[in-house]
Image 1 (tube, rainbow, N blue to C red):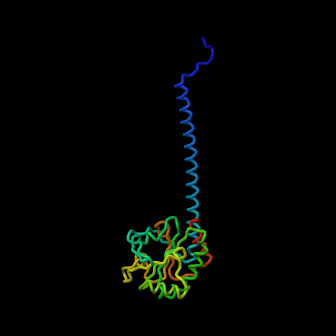
Image 2: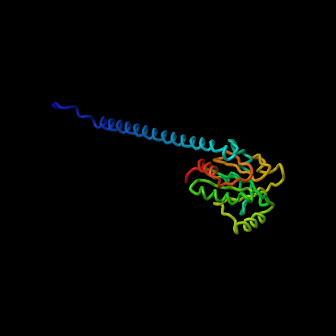
Image 3: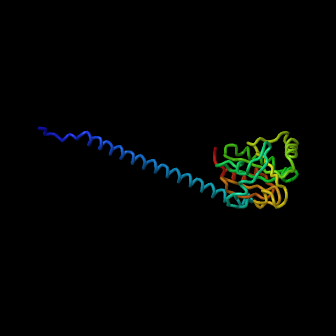
Length: 220
């Protein structure tokens, strides 16, 4: 006769162990979910804070708020690169602030702002930031010769990705789909959304302009 506690059957012990494992899994899943929600909240707050700070800077830098998505026509627009063709969307990396500039070598103000554009790129070397310049020159020879004359070399795509719009007739250009009739004109894009517009040439080293881009561009 056994006066002690009843010894559980093997099946009962296995079921109890399984219940404990399920309980631990539920607790761990709950902790992970809470942690994920906290990360998302922090990221959302950070993004909202950056947008708010950028908006406050816009009046001082003369930027125009846009806030629309790229259209299908804009995203699929075919552009010429030095080594082939690509769509505009293919030139716009994700999670990267894009500086989209419409220009031409024959445009005086366009030439004048180029050095400050390169300096802005250097200022944001620690950020996910890309410059894309869409030219309205007649040929790639014109573009290459101009860069050679001004800077003794053509910029690398990391410094400035230069593309050419093959559509030069009024009313049929990519820039006009953005609302640009005169150059230079610059648009700020992020993940397929047009955030803002800068009309005419700028000194891109202006401290407020640098702060604007630094506020919006994700860190590396």
